[in-house]
Length: 210
Image 1 (cartoon, rainbow, N blue to C red):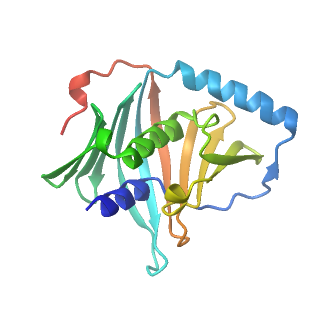
Image 2: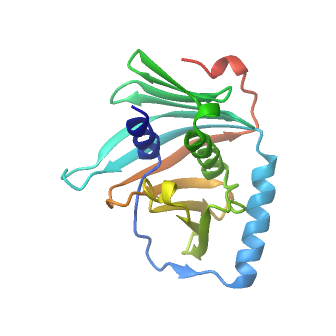
């Protein structure tokens, strides 16, 4: 069950989309970009956003599309709710992860599972952009006409068993994450596009429940 749950969590964050005219950032651009993104990430106390997810599986001719909303409250509360095509949720709270699959609930204690604990921190860091200090990844920085891009490759075997690359896209206008990609070793991927993002608006603790 734990292996399946790990794959489900990673499938939330998976996609590979080629961007035209992508080039590497210069050293000066990298330094400036990292400083700005880290400063902005440290300001984030709460985040609320809608999202559309596109899941690509090699054996399917069409992407699987789903949509929902996400709530984040630093330092350790995170809720994903899928509304279409089915109702599904994943909640990180009080050092536990709870999955609600159309009314059927499962719980994992993060304190007894370091792998899930790292996944939780990685997910929160991916959304906020606060992953640049992570020692578990090799990071390269790129840009295209309208975006800045950070590509993270895991250094550890336990992470690389589930993920080949995380790609974070940042719009130039607002240096927070606008899209997340997670590419699996199998080359399957998921793309999540964030919409209607609200930062540091009040979110009650009661909102983090099923």
